[in-house]
Amino acid sequence: MWEEPCISGSNGSGTVFFSGCNMGCVFCQNRKISRGETGKIITWERLTEIFFELEEQGANNINLVTGDMFIPTIVKAVGRARAQGLKIPFLFNTSSYLNADSVKTLDGLIDIYLPDFKYIREEDAVRYSNAPGYVEAAKAAIWEMVRQQPRCEFTREKSHGRRDDAVYEEGQNLITKGVVVRHLLMPGMLIQSKLIVKYLHERYGDDIYLSLMSQFTPNGELSDYPEINRKVTGSEYESLVTYAQNIGVSKGFIQEGEAASESFIPEFDLRGV
Image (cartoon, rainbow, N blue to C red; front, top):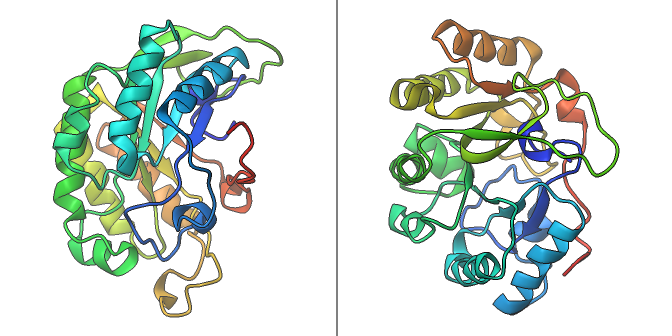
């Protein structure tokens, strides 16, 4: 239920979390899974079954979270699910630290891309995420995603139960195709965030949606990184949102102030696996 309104809607997004991550973010909130400390080995055939089980539960989409290192398996499973008649969209949720050629193998299989654009300064990508080459990799990967899904498309949500009043400019519509680029504002990095928003808006305009996030929360392990060992202030985030509006960004999402105090982390208890 914690994705953008056009993804979660009132029925929720069918998230499938993959264990491990090719980045090493010092501020990671999902270390239990990102460091490969939990998970269960399954076959790609079982993965296909999970897709159908989520569809049967009423999920709006299949949300593949941090599947960057499992793309060959994902290609097999998604291809099989499509051939067997799965109807809801597939969403690829990624850090964008991957080769554009890998993204090309997903062409025709993924309906919605949900990439991060974390950094536009190489030194920060290395210091905080151990991700040399991140900036150019992310630019190339997102370019390929937009090439595959050059515009966002929506459909009216069909509710299977309760319905929340989503504050969303498209009403109660759900995204079925397109690219939503996320950016997490980090403490003291307002200028970098503005540069990222500027780059994305100049490059893609209204062909993509921007999701500007304020939920950065220290994980208790940042003593060696005192400059980011705090939450983002309201004035920092307001400045970023105002900047985006002033340069003409009209399609996007922002977070309410209490987002940084909420938990967006599920219990990784192998439920549904």
